[in-house]
Length: 181
Image (cartoon, rainbow, N blue to C red):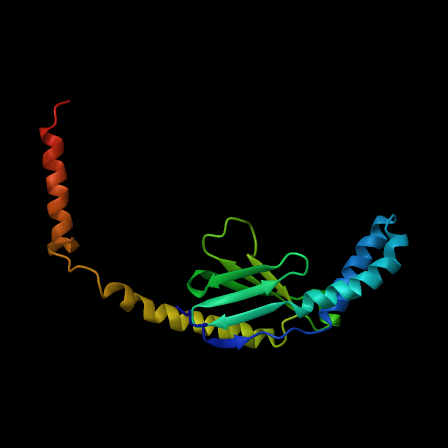
């Protein structure tokens, strides 16, 4: 049996300058700790390689029903986020990010157990257009769902209750009345 691949509506591309932003963030951390200052040359050599590999493996794909995020260098992580669960797509742009023309897209979902974003992606090119495409697809999908869900629902009787459910509840009530305490 073959499984069909989802139709890709949009594929995010990432700004290569995001590597510089990540490297400067690590450099700042090493400078602040003072103990890390001797590690700066190692950070720049290793960091250039690691951030490059990480960026090569970073993917964000919009399909008809989901947003698929793949990332990681040492540990690969893939998250499939149903569009109907997305509650917010926020954009963040700090002063250093503006220097490199980079924004972060934070994805928040309903039912998320942690505070803040479920996923935060740095450096998506044309992030506003990508965010708008995700939100538009989510809205299109949500507009179709209520009709799909109600197709198989039983018809309600007077008062808005299903006749079979009412009969079952009456049987349960009568059974409970006849039981000795």
